[in-house]
Amino acid sequence: MKYKVNFIGDSSIKLSGKGDSPLWKKAVVLKDFISAWDTEPIKKIEFKSLWNSANLFFCFKVYDAKVYIDNTDNTINSIGNSDRVELFFRTDKRLNPYYCLEIDPTPRIMDFKAYPNKKFNFDWNWPKKDISVKSYIDKDYFIVEGEISIASLKKLNLLIGSKIEAGIFRAKYNKQEDDASYRPTWISWVNPNTETPNFHTPTSFGELYLEG
Image 1 (tube, rainbow, N blue to C red):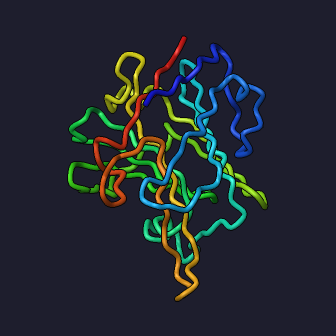
Image 2 (tube, one colour; image 1 turned 45 degrees about the horizontal axis):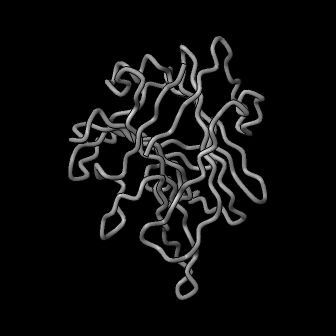
């Protein structure tokens, strides 16, 4: 699976969290998301990305009137139990290493460095000067909008030529009727073709191509 990231030249997107910059009209809208392990239809998700010489910009618009956020605290456990969008970046198919950004609608970021077989280093964080995220929650949808520096992508060996190997995901937590608990539906751009839900596998990644 491939996605074209259009170039915006000397222009730059000022993040508002609402994805309302006119420049977003220049982006390809990715809507091809699936829930490979669930038979229920999923609500619409739109992903956009653009770039300039300094930053890779991204924007998720997730249609959802029942957003669930675990407000227990700001730990990775609370973020991990909340509705969120996710971007994974890998150096190569060996996943040794790869880098994960999981962002809820508030927007709290769970960022970590990962290795094969779901070995996660939560002590690692994307450098704060190299990432910025804002969000907005409406009654029918939420938006997560962000930018990542090109310099950090290059430093982590994630931008090779014009290509970035990336996974684009969504976790939706649904209230269960039997016990009122919340359980996730896992949604992805690329079908990993695994028996059980798993984004942490080589087959869950696609390719972003920086045009221009």
